Length: 116
Image 1 (cartoon, rainbow, N blue to C red):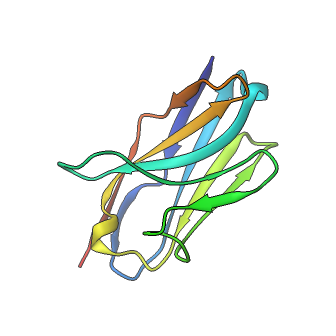
Image 2 (tube, rainbow, N blue to C red):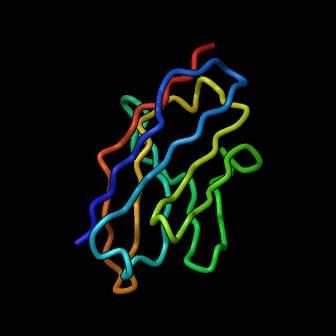
């Protein structure tokens, strides 16, 4: 079993930057892909991007060129660097991991609010 704890959310002005982190603990050796989703108030949860165990990244079109996902395997941590933030990026951001067996696990979420 893996526990995921996000941190680093907060309030930022439009055009600013913010980095959120997600630290995994427990059976971290079984983690393959680490990624992020977000859910704005009143909307469905949407995929933001992911990074594979080999370091390959992929992003949703809405954040491509502005967000960067990285991971530190030694620290069992995945990061989401968000640049050029827009008010429409306001959401609860959730860490998500996929295990080699295909199972998923979710963090509790961290609020990111972008003011105009």
